Amino acid sequence: MTPQRETIRADEIPKIIFAAREPADVLAMLAGMEPSWVFLLGGSASEVLGASKLLSDRGFSVFVHVDMLRGISNDSEGMRLLASFGHPKGIITTHPSAVNAAKKLGLLAIERIFLLDSLSVESGLRNVLRTKPDAVEVLPGVLPEQITKVADSIDVPLIAGGLITHLDQVTAALKAGARGVSTSSGSLVAGAEELR
Image 1 (cartoon, one colour):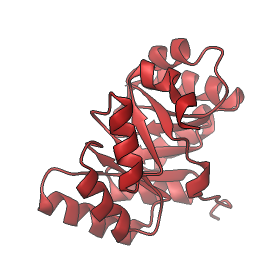
Image 2: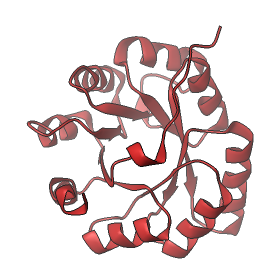
Image 3: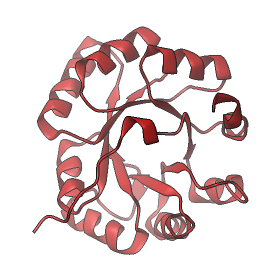
Image 4: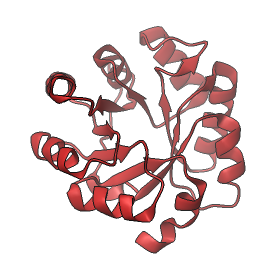
């Protein structure tokens, strides 16, 4: 039986989401900060599971990029292990099968679309229509015209990520239709108060 699932409401997405490349990055960066959303983009299974559980226990909404996780695959068994021991709120992936596996376990799913060319955007949008993730993240997040195109083509919230390092890029992505941006820039995360 599929567990009861919540969904991602557009108004709950923070304007700036810290995207940690390694679990150690997030633990140092978020010490003393109010709980918010965190994207764990990589690391070994033991590091990510530990960081995810610790942050979840502290009230953070943790999303693990399962395609970049070392030591656990992004199949249904890998998702079950992640959910059981890491307790994330959800996952990030480019793979439709991972979206479906996560949803069956009651995890939220953010599907990534790369804005490389028109074919990659069209393919990504077809996948989103088929898998119905809870949100979409587009990369790179510094292409406002493409952000608008994708946001207008989907019925779930859009997050922009990748290459965002300055506040003006955040503002442009939000004006283009993103509900939030993910960034590894500690200074942007620390300055997120400016956008509230």
